[in-house]
Length: 382
Image (cartoon, rainbow, N blue to C red):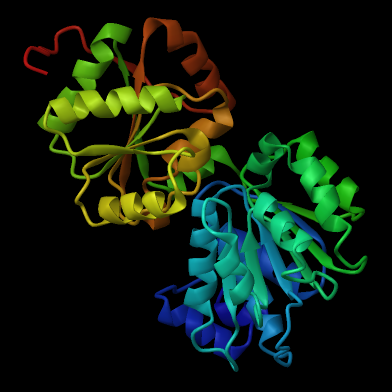
């Protein structure tokens, strides 16, 4: 399908093509016409499938036709679970608004930075991307109004459910008009996500892009698993990084203290590594991400919640130093590489204690990944 058949304006299509896209992704073909038609939507699609643009395009398409209101009334609100994802969504809006009929002011707000500059910059903002906590702070200070809201988007809905989101959503909805279009996007489907729509009071159209096996093909990810004892994990990880000459690798662990410990050991072995986690300030996170993108840092170590919002072009390798708790999080992790059809490698280090859980992850995700032995690998010096 061509972009022209989605129902988007020629101005927006020009912006899309300027960004280098040649045809819409399956989720975009399904979602965009329904959103333009005014339908509430619940969309389930794998990581890296183009979910964000599926709502960015219709919102921009509608907003460019409306007059600018120089006030603090928001037109479209996008709720996200992390600061990093907020910046990523903001970047998508800014990419596709370049050739529209008129200028549209967009902004991302989140905690970890001073609220006063955000309050001052709110005048004239039409599209706001926010984490729930910071949004509530701004509402309490009357820094913005949701009384004229037309779009409410809940992105990464499955992750928001794990942060006490339901109570925050109830408080946010009290500030919203009864008539607004609601869009939920998630990589996984669950009863809790369906419960959100009931909480909002809408019956959405449900669409789903066939999931995990298809995600594996689309993301062009080579998945490898090594059988390695817990005490040999560290040396084997250093062996992989040094012997395979990996230039840019994202490592997932289960806890912040593990990330810090692993970073220290990598640095001792002259590997440029750092961590990114919720205990660091927002400015420190942004600096870390930028250094990683530019290649000043070779290894970035993250936990699941923070890693979800990391979007790095041409990320070569993802390593699961520790397995995630859920099969869904496994897909989210490996989806950081191999994006937009580019090749990527996902490596999992499996201790004997993790083998049963890894088998469950494979079963749920319809994967078959043989465990490769590391017994004969000489780790002396690593």
